[in-house]
Length: 175
Image 1 (spheres, rainbow, N blue to C red):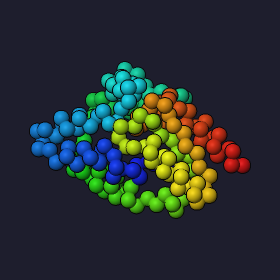
Image 2: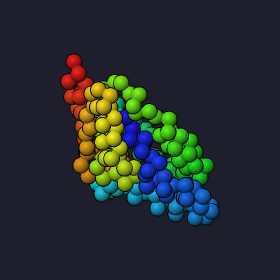
Image 3: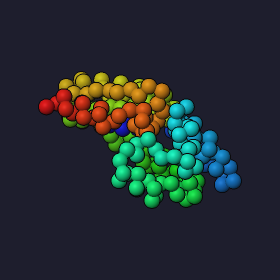
Image 4: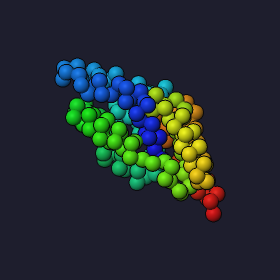
């Protein structure tokens, strides 16, 4: 379950549309103003090193993934362009706002693992994880929440949590 179901109550919902409405000469600065919403203290340095092609993400743990990153990702720094304003508008309006409104957590009937960063500045993920868990428990759905201490919005990226192990443990307990 993606805690983006709480998008309407998020810092991104409050700030993003204003950035999308900026004049073209101010828009790149507006995008930069959103960056603190997406990084935590741990990921800021790591993200910069990855974007500058100084190192690979920590999730590269096998030769096949490393080969892919070597072919594609390390050249991203030279390919990255600022997100076009229309793309930002679409993501905010059609993807996040419409998508979060379309999700009915109460309709979920399968066991659910909810993972979130407790330092998420983009979305109120800790609150949403608790709400999701409460809703599912009320409907007798097996649920577990896993908080990633100190992690921001991208809590499942990098080495902050062994997501494969968390999923294996949770779903292994269902047998």
